[in-house]
Image (cartoon, rainbow, N blue to C red):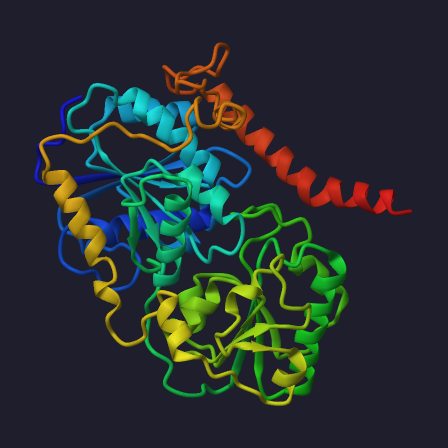
Length: 447
């Protein structure tokens, strides 16, 4: 497979959920060598950039509605299995490949790509990273991403932590590259709207139980009743039956039905940036939406009602100045962020954001200009992790050497119509089981 010889830069993005597709596609735009990018979804700002999207088929494969809501365009977009993606990478020449996946998926693709590109002098540059705040499984997730040419860190703090982990296990840390979250942007907050608008940005995975979720909804509805002059919005990530990066067994839109909210309370979907355009106070447990909000200088509150705990992720905001309870917010409190803390988180409301990706672009430009590139060399190998790596690879039907396992689904041909129908039916059955059947079984077990 010869390297790309046209002037157009070709980038492939492999993602496994709607949020990771958004991160991967916008990251591709921002890291492509060229002029600094302004914030916003892809709209042709990078002249000569061809972006092909691949959605890894699984439990969180985004629906057409979710993809439309993300608002990121690609020149082509299709669903694939891991083996189908590897076949595409063997057949088509790309300059850059962005892996926007969970850690295990990244590790499997690194080994698979090392196999399909074996012998190439000028293989594509491989980039990976995290879609948001890294508050759990730091070492595990990082080591599963090791081996990519660039491992993007969304902040100065993350870059320091990433390098410390790699150096601590004796792995090459030169791939760690500081950038910022690629979806920051929008107009800065200039003052209160009419009506004053409070937005609670939910998360699919935290809190993970009915009691805490109902509590948060009751406090949100209570805030709406206490302040009838305000508009109170519940910002949802997905509709029932859809999945995002995390599984949601207890959708808020179902729990709210029993609470009889007032007229100034509404459910909203859509792009977070558009919602922030009319927000006067953003409230969340620990969502990345808080960083989007802080970037635009919108007053932001990270709730402490359920404690400041690692399992919730709000411990990441210790020192931010944003921690607050519903009692305080009901009384009119508006948190004031700590500027030093904000600066360390990759949130750059000072106007320097378009240059946050300069270092990544420069590194990629040098790699693209080099006459050859060394093979991909992940930290995990059959020698360093013989009891861990084979299981990671097997989930994607790969053997320890990155080759397809015997009996793996056909990877040398496109899926036929029948197989596509079966896949859609299986995914629908899985989602139904997670959101309908599993909660019932769990409640029966508590009797």
